[in-house]
Image (cartoon, rainbow, N blue to C red):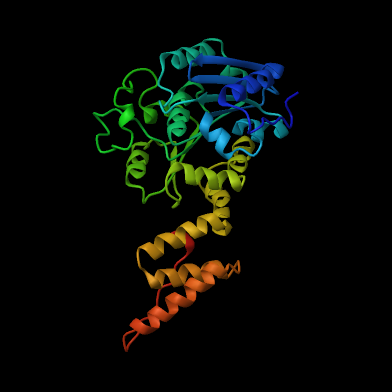
Length: 324
């Protein structure tokens, strides 16, 4: 059994993959899809299948256990899980991956599970959305995904020059179209990241919910969600059948007490040189947590506002953290 399995951080990438292969073949399978992609499946039950797209670098950078996210979430819950792992930034755009997913569909693999959840962030969020078409009715949780990097449609996104030769026009190409048959799609992104916001706007299906999370690029958002166990809570809610826009927002509200998120908000309002908003944020945070940094910046903002105050002051409207 793989319960509680870990992989040492001291291993090379090839040694890590070999260790994962041994673990995977204990209760499922491990297969190399290309020289830079692999899939590992662990079968535990037919109630839930959690499908996660990750990069090898991402797993080894953030996982305390050295294991893919699906292992950390699913093992204690008795869920089956499938992890697709990339060793390079290619958005899982390879014909062997298309063929692999096609085979799963042909074999009725996804039909064996009562519920299927797709998850990914950034490049992997794109893949989670794009390949969700293989399991109609599934739940998709995608963090700051790209809708496509087809230059005809997204010439405004020049962040990934290495993708210009990738094929986003054929199989599983335009992610928003691939989510049309999903049960529910949740796209989490930072509206202040221009390109991420533009990609999110392309996910406009009736089954799609967009969620603002002011934290920067996908990696920062995902790091927060992992550290607060929010991904697991969202998956639990999806399995319970009550994950809708309101429930999603309720679960995500945990970030209002998450110090890295709050510090990111503070850094943003300080960079914008907005002392009144800084004061509002610091007061809101200090009402729940005595964090010295926020006390310091509250005092600084109040001094600044006092120095700049006009003879007649107008009351400042109350602002919540969600509005900052």
